[in-house]
Length: 204
Image 1 (cartoon, helix red, strand yellow):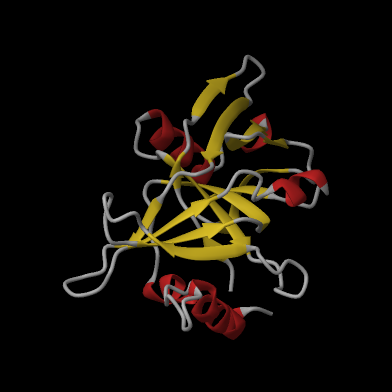
Image 2 (cartoon, one colour):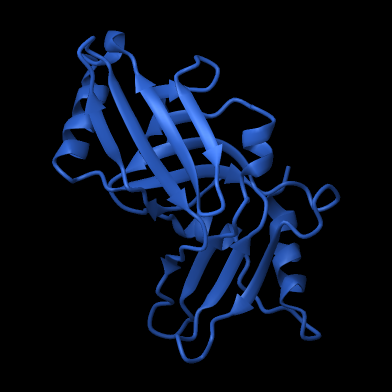
């Protein structure tokens, strides 16, 4: 199962004289996204990415797509096509995409860029997986929020395999996806015990 995240992406669109467009954005590190408010009796659940979480994917130049709404049927750019450039910085994963003139009149492209210009698309959402535990033992961790800030469980992703970045209007996490992450503080005082149990249910 591929997971998704969310952050306001500082998106900037510039149309070019040749009919193409340049889209720039950033997925900030250490920015907490609320996956669940906990309902009436549960605890809120938040997630953040540590600096460099996507460094391996960027440095190995693996294929990554820029999509609309996590749909591979609605691509905008890709590394394989030479139209998507990724840069891993201490503060954020930064991307530059060239949206070719040849697809500017395709309906989903036109609609997405119009929604972006109107301020209706405001965020960047990565599609990712956590590497196998035997390969990266400490790819993620779970801890309790500082009591002075709240009572949420916070999941920090230290390393992830990036498959795609998507333009989204707002975060939309299904209950299945939220539960694919683990928020159990575990046993024996180790918050990662429960985390590993749940992750093992969906890792390939």
